[in-house]
Amino acid sequence: MSATAALLFADLLGVAVFAASGASAAVVKRLDLFGVCFVGFVAALGGGIVRDLVVNQAPPLAFDDWRYAVVAALTAVAVYFFHPQLARLRRVVVVLDAAGLALFTVTGTLVALRAGVPPVGACLLGMIAAIGGGVARDLLLGEIPIVLRREIYAVAALAGAVMVMGLHRAGLTGWPMIGAGVLVFAIRLVALRRHWNTTPPS
Image (cartoon, rainbow, N blue to C red):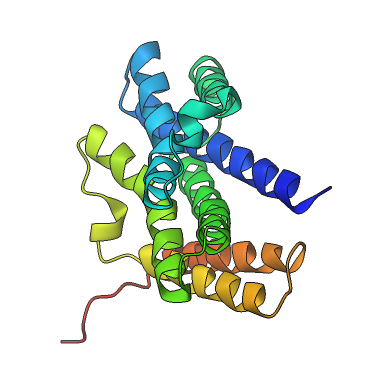
């Protein structure tokens, strides 16, 4: 599999995961089918659209490549109809969100680096691409975005983006990038389990 194909696969996988996360959260709020699909679509593609606009990818891949919209829509529809089989839905949402955060951190940072964005900017853009969909999802559902709740969320994405940048500069592409995604996923879930936050000490 070429690097371009691998990046596309990871990007589409991130779309599916964030679409499932958004749709699952919408189901919890008891939205109808359209609402579930819309929230899933925004959660899946919001961060990527921001990423593409910043690197002058016009139109953004979400609109230029039909696979992005189809993957997001089909995933959201599947979640809507099969949500009774998803046990402990809130936990599923958290795990899916962490997975989406990890995938979009890696792909967002790589896209920025390949577009010639300097290292610091690429890391910031990778973080923004990762958290953008989750922020949009929470706002649509009337929730305070996770990134503003003192939780280790954006920090996890930024740590992964820095690792991606370091690996890229060292010429270690391909499988080593999975380690960056695992880092983001692990930091997010461990922080939730251990109740880590960014509140300053009293």
